[in-house]
Length: 128
Ligand code: AMP
Ligand code: ZN
Image 1: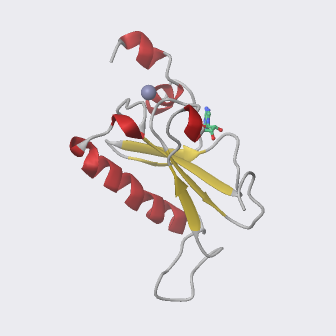
Image 2: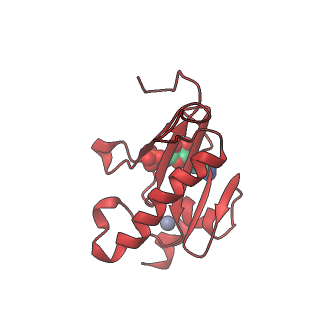
């Protein structure tokens, strides 16, 4: 990755603490924070620290990272009060939605892969 491309990437800058975010989780591989323009009462972004432009740039070597992001979505949803328990009554507001936007037709605006996590009482902007 060219250095200037990294320097221009807003999510690389957030991961490097060059610009602030409302962080809810961080480890060596990923950071998670509240979306600055939330489409739902709770709207998180789970972002790998590695600069990967889109889901379409991933291959088998990213399997563990992608799996970790999905599992983290469920864990953070639980922590944020929007989780779901499949074998019971449900908790919080009864569930959440995860989403990768991929490419222009997929509505991707930031070309550093990120997993959206939405939840909380409806309505949500742009969702049924
Ligand atoms: P996407 O359309 O999937 O690329 O989504 C990009 C998301 O990043 C949008 O929901 C934006 O609101 C969000 N976003 C952009 N800049 C920031 C920022 N500095 N901090 C938090 N979220 C951001
Ligand atoms: Zn980046």
